[in-house]
Image 1 (spheres, rainbow, N blue to C red):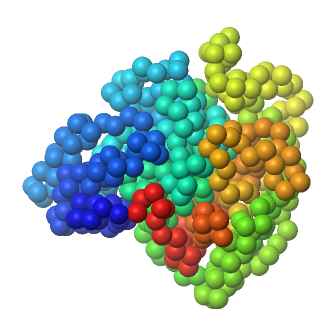
Image 2 (cartoon, rainbow, N blue to C red; image 1 turned 135 degrees about the horizontal axis):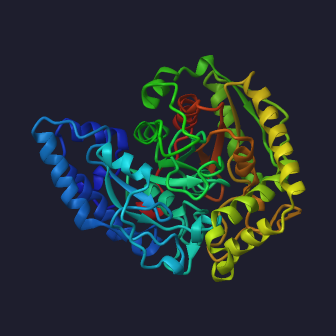
Length: 474
C-alpha cells in the first residue's frame, strides 16, 4: 500500500471520514485527493469507474470545505466522495447504461437518489461499470469492457453493481450507489468482500423509471461496513411524491436505530444453508458455518431451520421477463440491438401468457408468507449470499453448482432473487475468507422496513469475522 496521509484516509470508514471532515480535522479536498490517488493506481487494472467527474468533484469539495469553515452544516454526508452506477442518471455526467445505444448520453437531470445524495453533501465522483442495463450477473459490456475482482483480477466481481462494489472494496470511494433486482447489490458485495443492502421496495425512491409501480428493482448503497450502509440509507431514504410505492421509514435515523439495536445477546437468528435448492459450494458453506459458530460463541442464539423457497425460481424468471418487456416497451422493436442477456429477457417476457404471470404471482404470495412466518419468530434469517465463489471474468455465469447444471445467467443468483420475489429487504456482509482466499458473503434477511435491525446483525457478523483488504488494494 502507498504510504502517506492522503492514501491512509481511504482506509477510514465513511462514518469516520464524515466525522473528521465535520470536525475540520481534514478537508473535503484532502479526502477527494486521497481517493483520486487510489483510482489512478488501481482503476486501470480493475476498471471499476468508467467515467470520472474529477473537475466538478474538486469544485464541489472546495465549496463544501468553505461552507464548513463558515460554520455551516452542508449535510450528513458532507465532503464524502460517492460513485454512482452507470444505469442511474446523473446531471451533466455521462450515463451510458452500459449500452452502445447510449454511449454518448448525458442526462440533464439527476435521478432522485442522486439528488438526495447531493443534498446530503456527498460529492459525486464518477460512474461505475455495469452490464448493459444491469442485465447480467457479471460486470461486462460492449462500451467499457469487463470489471475485475480485486481479490483476483482474473475473476468476476459479479453484477450488476460490480463496478460500485470494486470501487468501495479498494478504497476508490467510501460509499457507492447501486441497484438490486436479482441480487445486483448483494452478489457483488459477496464477491468483493464488502457490505451491500437491498432496501425495502419504496424506502428509497426509484424515479425515474418506466415502471414506477413495479416493486422489484430498488436503489441502495454499497460500503465497506454495515454502519456505513446505515449512514447512506439516512441520506437516500424518505417519502417521495415522484414514486407511487414510496414509504417513509418508521425510524428517524437508520444509523442511530442500528446502534440502539446492537445487543446481540437479545437476538434470535435463523440459519438456512440453501433456500434455493440449487446446491452451495462446500467452501461457501464452510465459511458461513464458521461465521455462525463465531456468533454462537459470542452469545448469539442461532438456530438451524428449514426454509425452501425453490418453487419461486421459475416464478421469478416469469415476472422478470414481464418486467423486462415493460421496462423496454418503447424500444421493443429494437430488442435485437441489445446484448444477448437483455434481448433474451425481453423475448422471454413477450412469450408469457396471462396464465403464466398469474401463476407466478400466486407463488410470490406463498413465498411472502413462508418468510413472514419465520420472521415472526426470528429477528433475521442468515443464508449464503452467493452459492459459488468468484468465477473467471470471461464467463457470463457459472455453468454448474455441483451436480446442478445452470441454464442461464440468472439461475445461479437464486439465493438472492428469491428474497426479491418474496418482497423482503436483505443485506450481504462478509462472512470470511475460505481456503481459496476469496471472500464469502452472508445474506441477512429481515422484515420490511427493518433495515436498522438487518444492519445491526450484519455489523455483528462483520465484527466477528473481519476480512481485511483485497490483495489488489495493498
